[in-house]
Length: 74
Image 1: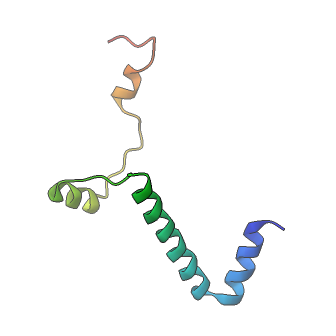
Image 2: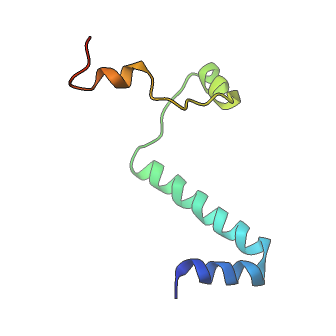
């Protein structure tokens, strides 16, 4: 049986309790992995606040991505 089917049945039967349990397990795993593999970064509080509050997204690769191509004139 596909894992997704089992998850769907569990969610249908247990509802939000199951969804919250899964979310907690994912957050615990992510926290463990970031600490074990030293993936955490230190950031200036002002920069962190600006990053957190930002709603801007980049949909293009930008000019610098083109500079990495072999045939690009510099």
